[in-house]
Image 1 (cartoon, rainbow, N blue to C red):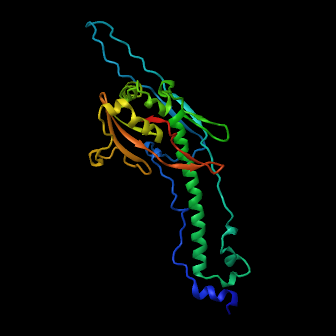
Image 2 (image 1 turned 180 degrees about the vertical axis):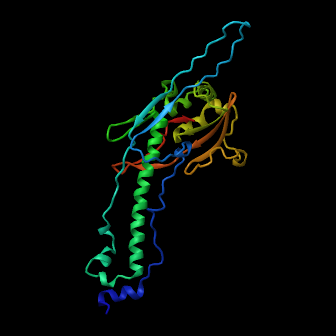
Image 3 (image 1 turned 135 degrees about the vertical axis):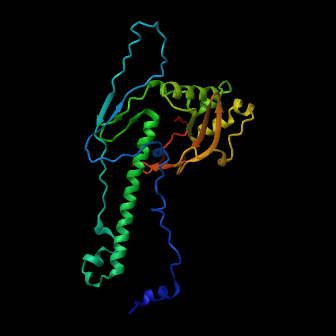
Length: 285
């Protein structure tokens, strides 16, 4: 029997489509693609660093003692990785009562399958939250070298102070006296000599305002430089670039730079959309 108040809707209304954007908002992992993921069962993990040099040998007179070489010791840092504990109440699922409530006897295979699919969907959404936290930690690492944790037990990777420059943020490129080529050359030289990079091709991630300021810089315009190139000419500068936008390549001195933006956002505890990359920031990798 159909109640008279519901009969009209049954015969005159039909659901033709539905939209569920929860699973369509899977986090991108462009920043994470610059790192190698490792999994361990240990509670504490450590990283070891040993600095290298590019010194050349000095010739000596035959029969002398020669030059004694000394090698620096490595440094080790140990820390406890952050822990996440996200959960939800399975009893709040729409069809939970059909399985375990007073209507349990009416449950069938389709109902069981529907409940399982709904639970898996919720777990996937929780997984996305954790993956966004990973991506945000990497963004913090690029910005300051310190992963900020709510527990207060921050992870400091001891980045060199010289690797974190304040050139006036994105507005710096708006200065007519500034030549962006000098900034890129200095960054390339630092990565090559101090960072011991093994080649001269680097990736640069620009915030949105930083990219606009770069393209509007008078020196860039004067050079008649067009940042846009055919992507087929780049030969996959970054294998996993989900969420990132490649704008082309920029040459400065002896170095070549792949220019990226990463227009991806996460919602903070107050529901405010926040970009992973500050819009005035420039990151050179």
